[in-house]
Amino acid sequence: MIRTLLVLACTALVSPAFAGPERVDFPTGYQSTFYVYNQVERPDRTPNQIRFMYVNRDALAKATGNAPAPSGTILIMEDRYAKLGPDGQAERDADGRMIPTDRVAAVAVMEKRDGWGAIYTPEKGNGDWEYAGFAPDGTKRTTTDAQVASCFSCHQSRRQRDWTFTFIKYLQDVGK
Amino acid sequence: MRKFLIAAMLALATPALAAEHVVTISGSEYSPTRITAKVGDTVRFVNEDAVDHAVFIPTLGHAIDLGSTKSGASTVLPLRRAGRIEVECVQHGHMGLLIVVTQ
Ligand SMILES: [Cu+2]
Picture (cartoon, each protein chain N blue to C red):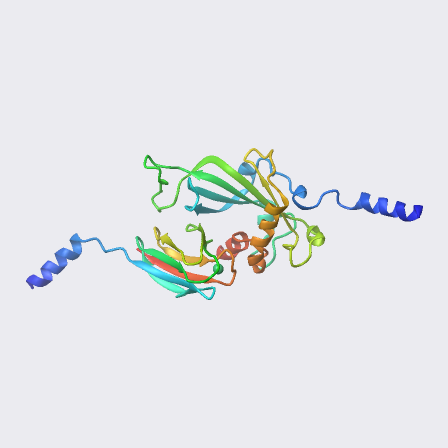
């Protein structure tokens, strides 16, 4: 009995202390260290936003469009407010694209590490990806179970692209 | 000859009318799956299905997310820039539409 308890206690100690969004840290300083690989306009948001997509440069150097992203990949979805004209409509550049401000509305992170997916069933899990949401200053985590579940379920439709909407597609489109 | 001149003058004076291209969403497919258009045209997506669909473009330089289009509703995509634009549905990874936009 005591031996069983000891074994259980030891197992608890060597198991990861955190599971789910707690495993994903806010990537402090990402605006200067990560690479912006795409900008997605959100005209459906009021006021309009532009979604900056970032990847850490180590992962970008290793990644290709015909394989899952490498362990250690961190993707950031940063929602910025668009620059508005006097009429309240988004201003546009010569190409007709919205112009971003430096005001951030929200930051969402997806990160993968070898083995992270082991705690999920294959149907629920997104490979080894985990998700977490942050306020712009990185201090406040907005990660209720329901919010994280919505990350997992929405990304299921891109299982064939390693559960990413834009990253593997970006690599394929630039021929990497 | 005079008719030709008048027609030519009208063509010069009148900007080409922007066209609205209609894409229906039915049976979880876009229809048609390829259209050609001009800068300034619009594409109206009409969701005839009972479930929500979306209009999402990951193409670099054109990327945009119009959010969900509810059953029975429609969404309009303005074409502001020439290029080969790939439209996808957020909810359904198999859905695809190519829009070729020229000046
Ligand atoms: Cu759909």
